[in-house]
Image (cartoon, rainbow, N blue to C red; front, side):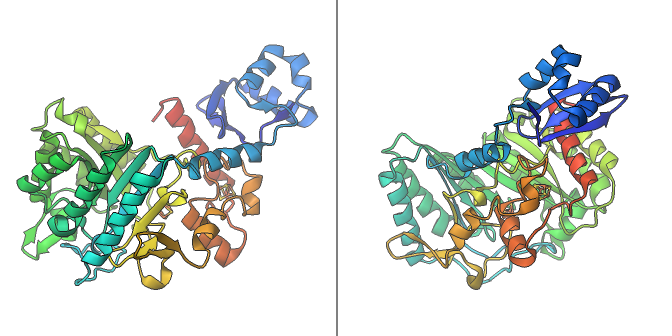
Length: 434
Ligand code: SF4
Ligand code: SF4
């Protein structure tokens, strides 16, 4: 037998925890058992069977010990292939415009005022949807996501005609469809909400940049007119009509201490309404990272106190839950017909991965799609790393950029303490210690 490459042993209060990143199993060990296991790692793991047969068999059963013949990296590759090359699902994201009604200081996109998808590109997108939904026999699930820019800016002119076409071509197939938006939520009206319900739009992700005035400092209509109150009232209106809202709260060191006050503006929601909201805490990535996890927890606790579901668990899971951009069947179509994989970089034409042609076919250019799909398992340090099943060198964007620039890399700069922190996040989630 051999000791799995994906095991870690870490202190947990007065004991230790043994965790495996592939099996996602954890067991708590008394110090004596930890010493026994560490000794066996040096002296030969098979000896443990004689010394402590029940412990040995438990470790085997939970896949902390494996047959010598098992190729652990290959198991991760097989899992990744099953997830990222799955043919039964497609995720299409559309940016109908790069324009936005706000201008947030941290927004990474360039707002292009005159940008909007024209009739010709709408036609190409519709052809693409017709092909996928009518001819792609392997397809079982189709997710249509709207991004931008602010996708609701041209809801009636661009978005609705495409959704109507999507619904029309999907209705003849027994296929599960899902339509969602990433929006700032300001432009939602009663009329638009009616249209969401008619066309099956079931979910929006809406961002707040803190509570009240903090949010208004970042997202405003004019210097004297903020947007917080309008967005909150739209959020409540949509939830009451059973449209699911992922309320993303972007926090910074500056706005953090007040974000719990958002919950007091949501108290009109009944217990049944709360099934339609998930609160999601995110640190703004340009903000300096201070260790303020206790303050974050206090804010989260206030939401939980009033019965709101909070998703703050973002422990790494880059293989089983890889990003849509890592998947073969995913594309982002920009308003001008350029095609990308990742939504977290700018959408300038010279960085595009391809385009959609007159027939509605996505043409990937310069081997960029293949290169991205092929970017995993190329970084040598990852192949012997205990985090491979959850990290896998980061997302494909990370892998592509790092391999191009540096050759070998590690998203944690090879810092074993940082890797142990990731393991502890997984352990806390698993043992529900968060
Ligand atoms: S940066 Fe990475 S995780 Fe984010 S959208 Fe792009 S590929 Fe996905
Ligand atoms: S990037 Fe670093 S932590 Fe992640 S799998 Fe590779 S070596 Fe491990």
